[in-house]
Amino acid sequence: MTGHPHPLTRRRFLLGTGALAASAAVPGLLLASTGNSSRLVVVILRGALDGLAAMPPHGDPHYAALHRDIAIAGPGAPDGALVLDGTFGLHPSLGFLHERYVAGNLIAFHAVASPYRDRSHFDGQNVLENGLSQPLGSADGWLNRALSELPARPGASTERAVALSQNVPQILRGRAAVFSKSPNPTPDIDQELLARLADLYSKDDWFAARLSEGMQTEKLADEGGMTPARAGAAPGMAGAPADRLTAVARMASALMNSDGGPDVAVMEANGWDTHANQGGAKGVLAQRLLGLDRALRALTDGLKDLWPQTAVLVVTEFGRTAAMNGTRGTDHGTGGCAFLLGGAVLGGRVVADWPGLSPGALLENRDLRPTLDLRSVFKGVLGEHLRIDTATLSGRVFPDSAGAHALQGLMRA
Image 1: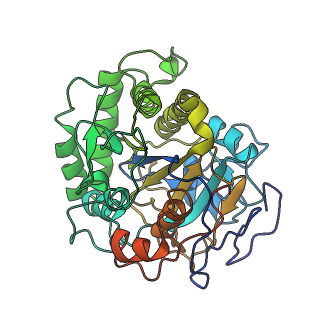
Image 2 (image 1 turned 120 degrees about the horizontal axis):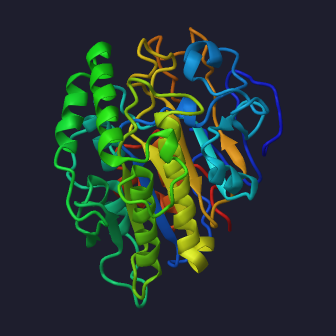
Image 3 (image 1 turned 60 degrees about the vertical axis):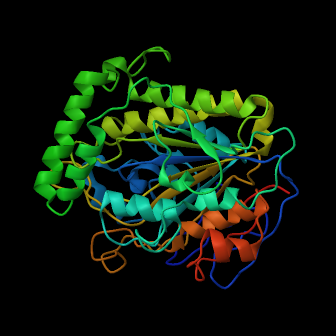
């Protein structure tokens, strides 16, 4: 179904036009005829995006009571969700993503997660990037292993991928040649320390909330542009986190459009750890989502003629708790959402085997229960878009993923 109301049921798949199989009972791949001209961008949202805010399940009867003051109202209400269908919507800050959905260029996934089931940012990001079921066991990343399997593209550089960051993240580490580039002249030396403190306090809701609140206050003071008064500032405004990500997106598109430019780019965005004062339709998370939305628009505009052959994956290490905590935020969770957009995407669909948010449905009585392995999405994109065969995906790229069968019908033929 594509954007039409329908009843909410316990384990329902939302399937759009094309043969999309999101079940372990349907293995295999449907190869698209994109050849080796395809482009892929992976956007990693570090800190754990609240999928129940970014993609609110407004049709679930338990959602509003759990998210309470930070819940997103249903479509049609003031500051309500942008409608996807009778169950799901998009946060009102994600206007560009909604345009892509209506245009048939966006697939939205819900109740999705990596195999990781604990709540450490570092371990969660390791699993997201190494493509395994455990945080340790491989120093390289699944995307680099995939690059190693691609045939050479005539005229392309031997460096097939770029990391738009100070350092190459794990997802791109390995034997395939890659490079890194960042528009920021110097790294933020405190980010790793803050992330480690967040992990240290992750099991103590009070300390986690205090740290998150302090980090957000610091960002407001140092960066500018996160307060409502600066929300409408010019796109070139220096220092605002939204504009930093937009600058990264513009650099990514320029590099991919250059002669012999890379086929693959990885972008990173920090700041999604919203333990305190998360906000609902307005607030800190809303501004982060607005920045992401603007960056994705800039990436799309910058890719120009490459857009029809491009896929963009937007993912995070895990979701957040189904219930609002005592400091008007959410804590580390499990199931969340992900997005796949691009001119090469057969979109206009929601893919969700929705478990529901009733007390008996929640994982450990606190989290959205994941029903789709992110590696099934990755395999589907790599198979159809980059034309990597099934045996290679299961044997080398994701070596312990026998239960995560590739989704089919994600890409246009």
